Image (cartoon, rainbow, N blue to C red):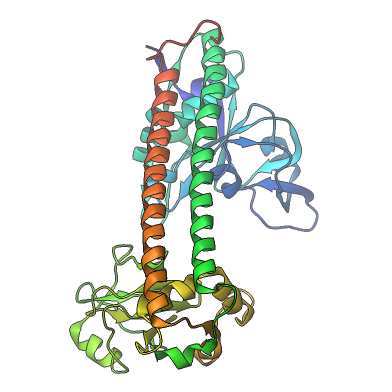
Length: 405
């Protein structure tokens, strides 16, 4: 087991005051910002840093050197405080940006990479989370960062542990990446199957969506939300062919529901599609006692021409999504007007063929869901193992092979 020591006894902590602005008379610099640290364990010169300006004193204090560790000092949630990134090389003209603190190790007392792994350990992260304070945005004061207790071992052992973790976490990260890639490939295969079944060659007759479905558009004034009542389906609840109502649930009161849904009530099986932000997500109604918000449109298939399940698969197909995107408007938030949506054409197979296609695609979807669920579980276990390994290594709870250490 290791001893513990306060961070300020082995490193200097400086909260950055370098903002993202460019001011006349200041030196042009590049900034390593919050997102650069949040999404990267290691910072190198090949990142695209943003341009800004700084005073000579800021350049002296916050220009990045090899071995520095940057940490997030404020965020929206406490568990995002003190996330570290390691500076792998000298970065002339690149400064530590606002919302970050620069931790510069005393190299005769602590190995820089060992310090990074200490900051990444659950031991230190949990302390930082407990120190974080605030209401709408939380942060940690620099004096509290300096008071964080970190493991302390002889410096040669520190270097061995750091080398060991470099190798082992690289191996774990590679495994995680391979499993995430397998999940992406499974999604691509399912999308290709959906496309080949709903837009087959030779192409069946094409009909405009208005010919195969009734549309109900709930655009208008934003409804008054309630803390309970009828579940409200917003665009964020429609994803992956389903309505995910347990994700940030929202509600309308029963009275507001009656007024808001006067254009028509959903039925089980009806297809729901987002028309903006995001565009083109598709789901189906499973409980008819729900309300629909703006930016979603409901389609009720004409059962004499198309089943609801077949319509849902067709709308999810890459071919239809490409047509949808081509007819969307807007620069920052792409969207489509319902009248233009109604005019988009889709292939219409005979009803008996539709039933066979739906059965086949539902089986493929179940297979895909099973694969992705298993891979997600494996990624979660590997992620937890990585965290536990880091903490156990830096605290001296596990034996590091002498060949490494």
